[in-house]
Amino acid sequence: MNSLIKDLQSRILVLDGAMGTIIQNYDLKEEDFRGEKFKDHKLPLKGNNDLLSITQPDIIKEIHRGYFNAGADIVETNTFSSTSIAMEDYGLEDHIYELNYESAKIAKEVASEFKDNKYVAGSIGPTNKTASMSPDVNDPGFRAIHFDELVSSYNEQINGLHKGGCDILFIETVFDTLNAKAALMAVDNYFEENNISIPVMLSGTITDKSGRTLSGQTVNAFLISISHFPLLSVGFNCALGTKDLKPYMKRLSDSTDFYTSSHPNAGLPNAFGEYDQSPENMIEQMKEYLDESLVNIIGGCCGTTYEHIELLSRVVKKYEPRKLPNV
View 1 (spheres, one colour):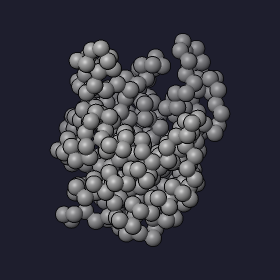
View 2 (cartoon, helix red, strand yellow; view 1 turned 90 degrees about the vertical axis):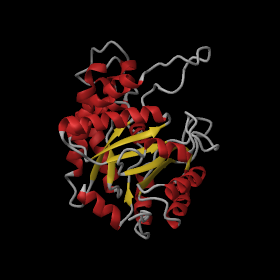
View 3 (cartoon, helix red, strand yellow; view 1 turned 135 degrees about the vertical axis):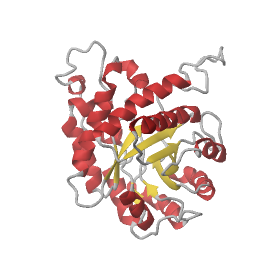
View 4 (cartoon, one colour; view 1 turned 135 degrees about the horizontal axis):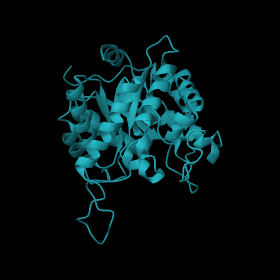
């Protein structure tokens, strides 16, 4: 924690870019995802990127190494969907500890290759179910998941990430703040039960230009809902591209005493669902975040690559970090 805070006070830290975007370049087949361990698994596994931490660890290490070499200070573990809730679709609910432990372990192994301070953030995604809204338009009172179920599932993930050696826990891409509050409760319970404390980052998602999360909260409502927890940072990622996200990052930065983070997509998806904003164009837009001192941690989400992070890491060196209002 002391090393991380010292770095945050002295410079803007760079987060890595997209994991899935790079994985697509490997053109992996079903048997690659299965590996030897899951060769007889009954359900299809292609597309389960998190599983590659077990079946293709060298590929995941190569991606982490690529982002560190590009200038990232923090890489996220390959665990965005590594909860029992999300893994139910693949029939892998019994492998949650292993998924998270191995993902954290291999990321730390790569981080240890570098002399400079390099950090590993355990990625805790939102799951594919929401506690605030019904998936059934005919039954608005129905919930596909309940708060206590989320807490239990997140606790299992957190245990694997911590035992694997994560420096940070990163609750990200929050579209339903009730899910995020369940994750924070799981973190709090885990810290108390194990008498530990490590930094916690949290990043929400503004889903459209109305400036609200999917569950309907404004920036300030979202911030108030999660500010009871002593977070290292709060921010926004995914959904809107850099340009459209900026006014909400400004509102957040002006309203919080936490450090702030942002890792937007490389623009908006095109007609084929692909993100094609060039590194030069995206970083030019990101300069506005830096010019106005909106962020302490900055990186990329969907569609971003080594090239985006390499250019970003060069640009941020010219800027001072955002100062906390009450520090």
